Image 1 (tube, rainbow, N blue to C red):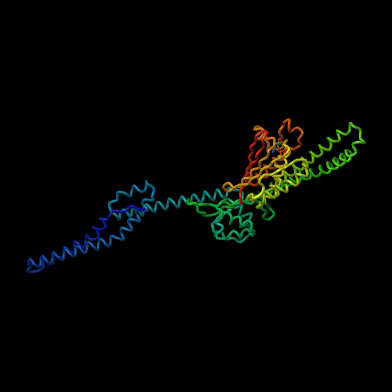
Image 2: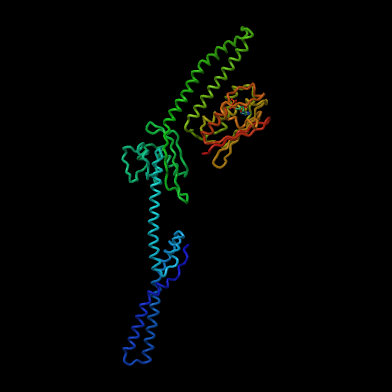
Amino acid sequence: MSKATHFPWNYFVRTIRTRIILIVLTSLSTYIICQNPDDYLFSKILLIIFSFIIISFIQGYLRIIPFRKTLEKIQDIQNQLPSNKKLSLIYQENEWVLIQEMLKLTQTYIKEQSGQIHAYEKKSHLIIESIADPLVLLDTHLSCKQYNQAFQKKFIKDKIIKVTNVEKIWKVFDDNEIISLFEKAKKMGEIARLYGHPIDQEFFNISITPITNDSDKITGLLGLFHNVTQSKLTEKLRVDFVANISHEIRTPLTSIKGFSQFLLAQKNSLPINIQSPLERIVSNTERLQDLFDNLLKLSIIESKYGVEKELFDLGKLVSSIHKNLKVSYPKRDITFKDLTHQRPIFGDKKLLEQVFTNLMDNSIKYNSNKETRIEISVEQIFNRDRVTFTDNGQGIQEADINRIFERFYRVHSYEQKMIDGTGLGLSIVKHIINKHNGQIKVESEIGKGTKFIIELPSM
Ligand code: ADP
């Protein structure tokens, strides 16, 4: 709120001064000119002078009112000025000089400010141009306000777009997914991303960042298009390579396994010293098959740019995994606690099926109890779904907990000596959770069991 201004005496006196002098002079001259002045006339003239003076005062005061308002405005502006500028205004001899000084000051201040704005614009232009990736700045109506050369070359090319900066973004991109991404960033007020999105036979990681002012109101959007065509192609080559290698190796492996199983089926007719090596050939071929399967899975997950999320019932998914695992572990009792009435979770169903298959497989493998007990619960913590997966297995030593997500890491213990594995299962789990922008933590107690806590962004 502005402070009340002082009464502008100077202006007031100036306003009524001339009038009062004129009134007094006129009355005196009338008095002198009158031929027979008497007491009666003199008192009449005095009364007239007095009334005129009062009227002048009232008139003067009425003229002060709009002037005071102007002074109040000036005081407001004065308060907003930096303190070094304000000082020169404090001791001014009268209101008019104050107004003059104020106007001068405001003029220089505006000049300084527009100079600064110009410098900022130049700087931001330089920054925008120095970014090699295509970049575009939009206002909240999705009109292009500014873009760099890279954006111009890549997306505008010969499209008719006015540099008057009023063209809408949908004139540049004829792609609903990109337009919805801009709209999503504007609506949610947070960065929206698309990974490996195809545009004109190239692939881009697109991120749209809302720009906000001091009061957190969105004033524009910044779109950055990072070209990932090359890395996507390299990635594809790598996946194809691993897929081909795995395929090429799996084919002879299957036949080795088939023949050795065939021989093993007739083990009674084979010499005793051949039976045991034959059994080892079968189990090692199975291990190799597992290894190549897992390598292939890991490679595919790594090469994935995004995940296709949906809401699904974790209880149903776990029950179907259970049915599959029952085939691999026909002699094991596997029981679940609390699978129904869980809240649905939001994620890539196929990938998360792999996560829970690996976790359950481990819970059964690394468990010496007659009955494998698994407990799964889902709860929402802020904007994340927390899935807690607990088993009653043999547990993991503190020193190993930090390493179990590393590729090929296996715990070397006496109990585990006979258990087959590739050391890739939890690595796959971690990669999938990372792809969801989630987190995984482990708590374990030897002899009691292990708890995996997974947090995923909820819908
Ligand atoms: P793999 O099971 O093929 O050895 P993983 O990456 O799945 O590879 O697991 C890494 C190690 O973590 C395992 O060797 C095992 O010692 C330990 N581990 C994983 N899950 C559990 C579990 N539920 N209980 C006890 N130990 C586990």
